[in-house]
View 1: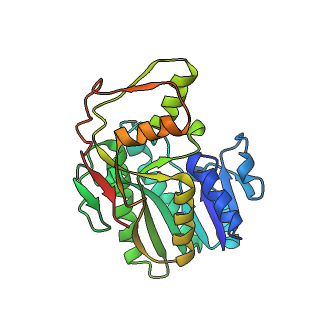
View 2: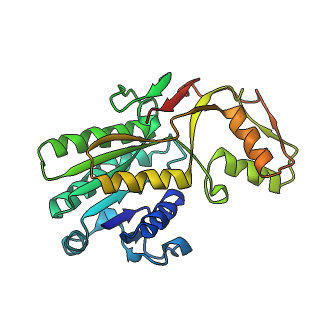
Length: 270
């Protein structure tokens, strides 16, 4: 397949592009002007552009040479209250609609467990959503708007890929594991946490990349959980990470309270 990937230079993007290339796909990786492509993108076609400012000629060029789009681009995904989530959501929608109208027949969009909001138990494709922060609200709106568009665009295969807590390639992420490594580098003795008792779905970036490639290739339509499908406590995940990487730092629990929108037990159902 000929696949466009937005957000290709990011933490998820570069690993997914690497997997897509390894599976024999042709990849056009969209980067902002001036970005330095990550080495994992070296076999892809690099296309420099702001996806919110594409001209009609650029849209036509992309649509003519590709049949699938993986939309990973999103600003400030680790800051759930950043104003850009709500400010940009219609720009994402307009971009995706323009690509579909230009002839891209399979569009896969990155979703998030945070669009569901507070929920206890396994999240399924049809689990009701009631997001509690701007990030989740924006993603949930985009999902609803795109499926409404798809309902009157029968030639479009729309996939909503719902992501959970991603591990691996941790030096280049913004996850809790990245912060643990940074604290270790700074010779801190303890890493402060909440109770650590919450159960989450942790999925390795390589496994996630494989799941994304399989879904794109399947051309199935609908909402799909890209996850491990197994609940694991934050305490267990942190202690396994410290042991696996032979770190000296020690976790210190009950320093912070849990965020009000964080469930005590939530994971994806595959």
